[in-house]
Length: 468
Image (cartoon, rainbow, N blue to C red; front, side, top):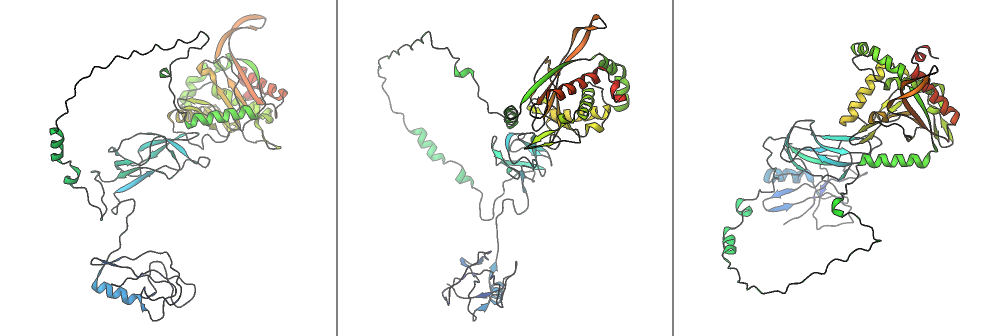
């Protein structure tokens, strides 16, 4: 029996050279070694000759009297059957496809596989979500690349996954049959089924008779009574330990970093909401009919914040090392609370928007944030944040800056309070507003002027029209 190795010869010099997909070289017996040879790891051509396997390899240093490989190949083709076979992850017919984690954004490198939306054996349509990956900012769906049957999940809930990680294997065949490689055979019934004879033998084994023995009763000592000074803690059975979600951990880290980095200081004021609420009440129907969106109070505060930032540009700036970056644009972040955590979508170029544009953008972003379909790009950036805790009934708070911004405006609930107007005590709808700012960059003078501008515009919206 002759054994030899067939490989492609790679040589920078010489009369013989190899290219991809071509077998050019020379064949020499394996036993003849005229000088040291350097083997090159390339594809192996497996030639089956009955029950014998012949491998021929061309290597550097072959003798000149070797026969050309094309003569060997032509001989083998005329006498033997040549077969090349490789096994890939998917089946040869393309029946199996893989569902992988999609690209999650430039700033996100990994996520946690939160939950599976489907089960093995379920039928899924193309682009139908089968799992959800939770990141530091948003929850991303893993969609099915093809329609078919889910064969198995190759990842588990709680695993840390990266873009491109395999999550599930989907069979495009509606039957969902198991693919078997050519060299593998499905298990026969005789192998999988248990032998009935063994079962019968086990059933026929008589049970050994055991005589009951009288055991002396052991009386347990009563537990020691805790001393009067020892605290009575609740039992561990009444506590639950749940791992934090990635979004919650990210929010906690950013807020703590804000407290550790910024010199936080908060200033307060109150706003009479009478005129803005009257404006909304008079024009809400006409506004809805023309623009297709309801007129809310948030658009008024966004316009007021834009006016305040234009009057006090330092509020819109940020510290970067030893420099101050002044932004010539105004991107307003709106804090939105969702069941999964706090997200902050951004209204881009708010200085160029009117009331209708702002209300439409807020409505769109709020819906996406609530149902979890908001993207990373829609939350990136932002130069100033508005947080409305009044929707939850908050009367007063000190909001925390959203890095890398330098200030945040806090809105609160509207409460009727007695106020002195024109020398008389009247009931007015009042709201407390708070501005938390980075005292390293912003002085108290600029912060108070900014908050006063908010108060003036909200109490008299005509100032926006006249730009005064």
